[in-house]
Each structure stands twice: as structure tokens, then as C-alpha cells.
Length: 138
Image 1 (tube, one colour):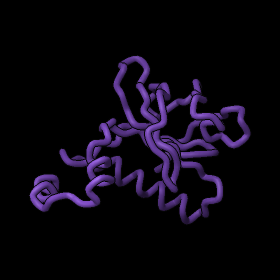
Image 2 (cartoon, helix red, strand yellow):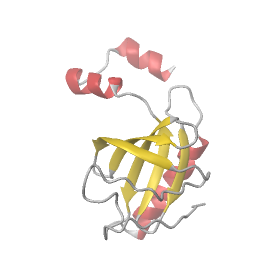
Image 3 (tube, helix red, strand yellow):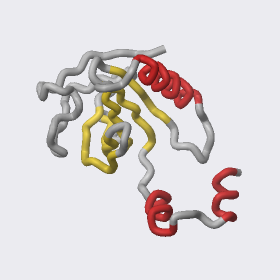
């Protein structure tokens, strides 16, 4: 089940604008709590990830914006299915998805914010010791 809201950024492509400092003030997630975009923390083949703050509570979150542009209907359906699965996951070693919504131009997945220690370790060491992997998987 996808939830939709309508967001226009005025930049033509609907994806956070062309500048890292662009902040949309009209994000309306499904739970009714808007988010302030603080700074970009990553970028990948699927989109950009920003550190954000939930207005009203101050909770720091991660906002992953995934553009729909150049994606097939099959890709979009698979993404909706993945979001639905993430919505139901509940495990202490998995970052929890807090919210997700869809506009005409993009998807936004809101998750708990976790500082990038694991990512930095993997970048530097290229692998984790077996005992660490076991403790994470337990």
C-alpha cells in the first residue's frame, strides 16, 4: 500500500533542488510531522541521504530521497514492496524505518539516524572480524 502526498519544490525536477543547501519546507510525511533537512550525509545510485530533524520533537532522523525519474513501473513497484517490508521489520540490529511517503517525483524513506561508524570501518578495513559479524547477527 503506498501513501502519497503532493510536493513541489519549484526547481523543476522535484528532487531537493540542485544545491546541497536547498531545504524543502513543504514535506508532509504520512504521519503528519514535517522534517527539516539538515545536511547531506551520503549519496548512492538510488538517491541521496540527508540528516534531518523531525519538527515538533527534535528527533534526528535519516531522510533517504529516491527519485522516480528514469525508473520503470516494475522498479517502482519493487521499491514500494521493499518499503512495505521495511515498515514491518523490528530487530535490534536493524535501523528502524519511522515513516515513508511518495510524491509524484520521489519516494522518501525516514529512518532512525545512526552515525556512520560501521560504514567508516568497512571503508577503512574492507571487512569485519568474524566475532563482530556474529555479535551483529545474533
